[in-house]
Image (cartoon, rainbow, N blue to C red; front, side, top):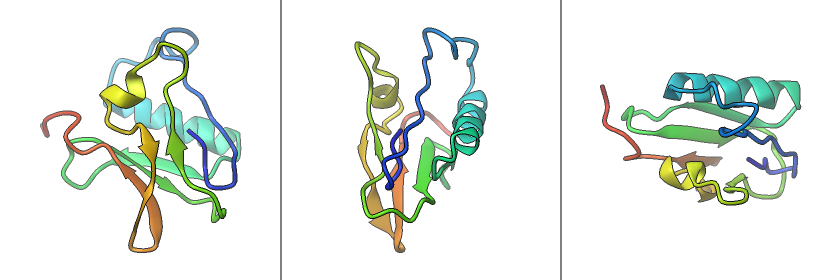
Length: 102
């Protein structure tokens, strides 16, 4: 995950972050790593509760983006792969439809 200033956080779901088994744990891990690394991104469930939503809070001139690294497909599978779109003046990546609302 790269914020609009170019700062990066990475999650290794097959390595150091392999203990993550729920969407809630993944959201918490993203937010914890972002805070620790001073990366301007906030993760939460989207309003429909069908995916993870990422919001850039850095205020940078670039784009919030999410990439899969190596042979990983987690970002693609969670429908958060790619660059943000502007919604209400905010850069948002919405993984809508990644799962069914409970």
